[in-house]
Image 1 (cartoon, helix red, strand yellow):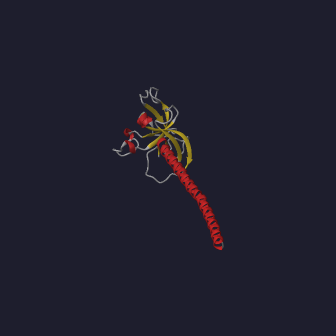
Image 2 (tube, rainbow, N blue to C red; image 1 turned 90 degrees about the vertical axis):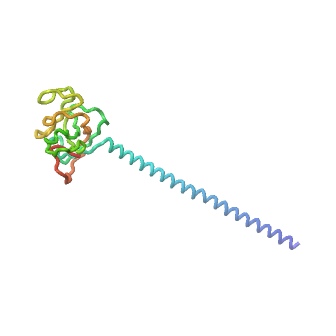
Amino acid sequence: MRDEQFVVADNIRLRQRDTRDTRCQAATSHGRPAATGGRSLRVVELAWILAVAAIAAGTMVAARRCLLVVRVVGVSMLPALRPGERVLAVRRPYGRPVRRGDLVVHRLPALAAAVAGLPPGVPPSAMPLLVKRVVALAGEARPGGGVVPPGCVFVVGDHPESTDSRHYGPIPLTGVVGRVVALLGHRAPAPSRRRPDGETA
């Protein structure tokens, strides 16, 4: 009888121990999802960060492809633009077509290299950027007489000392890099090699 009581007591202790073990396992299993959830949250946050970074990088690439910042160097556009000011231009062919009165950024025509004092043999892509105002479109009368040929525009500077289409003739639309849409403000000119009259990026 006493042996039976010991057996019963031992069985009760074993059942209690099993119950405690089960609770511990349950507590441990409840803790695991929390850790997994935290890890999942970190993965989601990282994914969001990478997505935002990708969008930002894509936006910068698109902006560089569509927009251009040009710094005014010469006095050819006084009083509208002062030396040291920066303008924002929309690159062609983005944006609306060029109209009369627009400020445009164009490369100095290769035929005008001698007029601007540039050495011979300068490739077109290395020609300086100029900011001028469109005063006549293709088919319209040009200052000084004559008509602007097809696919070209006649540009001049606002200042009397400007070197423009009155010196190097109408420029083809393919040479127009962009259309000025905003004035970004003034910045002290950085040291650079001397450029001919006009503006440069």
